[in-house]
Structures are given as C-alpha cells and as structure tokens.
Image 1 (cartoon, one colour):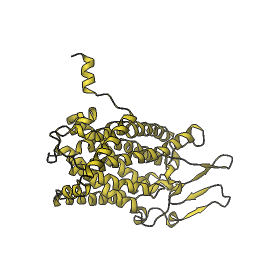
Image 2 (spheres, one colour):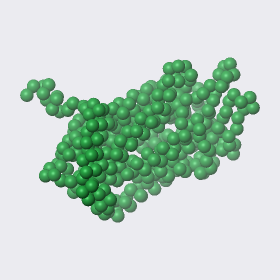
Image 3 (cartoon, one colour):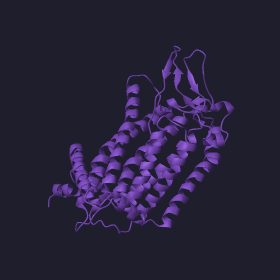
Image 4 (cartoon, helix red, strand yellow):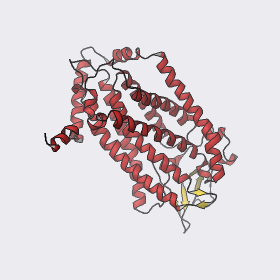
Length: 379
C-alpha cells in the first residue's frame, strides 16, 4: 500500500455541508417511520433513565455545589483582592472574577480532553463515524471520558445557577440559559446511551473557543492598572480575539457539523446485528439546534469585526454588555464590590455619554466630544 493510500485510510475525506444535511434528512425520515411503528422516544427515555444510579446523580450534584462554592471563595479571597490590589478599571471589577473562574475551568478541561483524545482515542477526531463501530448499550465508559462527562455536567449545572445569580447579566443571558439546559440534556442522553465518544468530540470542538474568549477578556480587564494603560494588553487581546474568531469558525461552524453532526447522522454505520440505537433522532435534533446557536453567536463576532475594519472602534469589549440589566442578586453585591452607586444607572447631562455604573460603558466620547459606540466579543 502506498503512502497516499495510508493517508486516505487514516484520514477519511471530510464531507460537504450539503452531504451532511442530506444524510441528516434521511436519518430523520427513517427514525420517524420507525417511531410510527410503536417504538416511541418516551419509552426509550424511561428505559435508559432507569439505568442512572443514585451515586452518579449525587456525584454530579456534589460537583455542581463544589464548583459554586469554589467560584464564591476564589472570587472573595483571590480575584476580588487581586483587582483591588492592581486597581483595574472600576467597570471591570465585577466582571473579572467571572472570566477568571471560567478561564481556569475551560483551559484545564480542554487540555485534559486534548490529552485523552490524541493520547488514547485519536480515532474520535480522525474518523468520527468510527465512534459508533462496535456500539452496544452496556459498554463501559473509559475512565478519562467519564471524568470529563462528570466535570462538564457539574460545571453546567453550576453555570445555570451562576447565570441567574452570579454572572453579569448580558443581552444573551436568556440564550445562555437555553444553551446550558440543552448541553445538560446532550450530556445526559449521550452518556446514558453510550454515545460518549461523539460527546467528547463535541466538548472538545466547543471549549477551545471559550479558552480564547475568557483569556482575552482578562487581558482587556487588566489593560488599565493603577490608572496606567498598558498597550501590550490591547495587542495581546487583539491576537486572542483573532484566535477566538478563527477557532469559532473552524471548530464550531466547520468541524462541528462536518465531523460531530456527520458522525451522529451516520449512526447506522456502527452497531452490528441491527441493534437498535436509542435517542438517535433526539440527539441529532439537539446537535442541529446547537449549530443554530453557534451561527447566531457568530453574528456578534462578525459585528465586532465589521466595526473594527470600518474604524468604528479601536478597542475590543463585550458587545453583549451594551444592554446589561443591573441585578442585586449578583455575586458582586454579595461581596460588596465597589460602592453603593455601582448598582445604579445614570448618564451625563449632555447626553453624549451613557454609563451603566455596574461596569458597562455603552458609549465613550471621542476627542471631538461625539459619542462613540463600544463593541465587543461574544461568548
């Protein structure tokens, strides 16, 4: 066998978007016809949920509590004292602990997944369709993948609480809640039905963008320290935003549909002896919804790029924070960050500069006194 033949065998040709769509449509038709014969999804959910053990549920719930306590303690005793010590901009004091905590999680777990996939299960990325070869509902989940699933499930349960009570409220926070519940459903159904290989691939392709995002936001928050601006932070943040934009397109809009969704749409290639595979239609629908969310969030990135290229802005901020709604339930209020005026919203009398004093600057004056819109990065 020639070298080229070996390369073709090891790295199958990536399908096109239309091929993925056609395969998904055929799968939907097949599954709907099957369900019409009496094998409904309700009975599948009941059967597989009954396999969940009490210990598994307790471990995930305990993990969510630990993540929440960890967020509170690291914010109160590490991140908040740090921002006060280095004196970053007031508007960023309440947002820095959130990004720092997310950065720790996403960076750590992405490198863990990188090691698991390319160190032990390289075929998951190389040939995703092979994820289902030899599938059976009673196969043991490898320890590394089980660990990732446990951490992800616990963190997303924590994230639901954090979005409501701890994070800065943004214009897409309701969408984030939908995303968190969708992700938890995907985690649960893929784990119970032993689709953990493709589930790991979905985690891997999505979390890299969060690594770029949260670390870039930290660079922005620390660009002003003790009243002095450090241009190096802006330069590094621009590099980070470029990495964020490219990784979003490549991983979430290219590899995700052409690897993960393609794999899920070809589940019939996996099991032997015509073994029935559960939740196929449900999981495929969820993956397509997730892709739609990725496309919607990508519009924020395109908006940012457009404003940078047209000179409407020279700094990168978070465009989702233009419509922040102050909330007295947030972690920053519990920790008494800043003064009492931070929770209010007021504006300059000349109407050219509107400041949300909980940390959001929606307009900044230019040298000529005209208001200039601040734009942003998307999550």
